[in-house]
Image 1 (cartoon, one colour):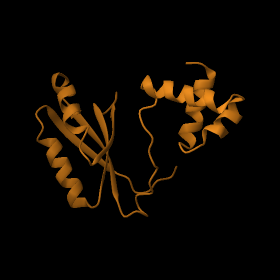
Image 2: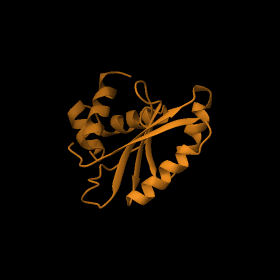
Image 3: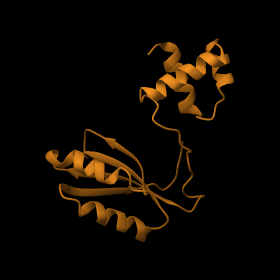
Amino acid sequence: MDEKDFKIIEILLENARTSKVRIAEALGVTETAVRKRIQKLENSKVIIGYRAVINYKVANLLCSLTGVDVEPERLWRVAEEVKNWKEVKAMWLTTGDHTLMLEIVVRDVEELSNVHKRIEKIEGVRRVCPSIVLDVLK
């Protein structure tokens, strides 16, 4: 990766819908060059997807950033089990207080409680620690 790749990532992090033409203008290269660079970043798994940033309060949705403590020998099995659940929108392997951090989006507290109970039942899960998002500030 070079500085142009980092600049593309910076632009897409700010607004993933920025046109390739605008990115090309910002980098001083052709749109074709930008398209090829983005394709390369996607193929190499540097860019793994594009998402909308949702204001959960306005959308009447509930978001929880949930820490999950997992026994080390069961980590990858737990991650594999929950990563494709429809309620889990993102998952990170972390250092610090929790092994995994999950972004869970649901319609109400009851649904969130059910998801947390499902997680707690997975072999190797020691603790589930939810933090409900009150408002999106950025």
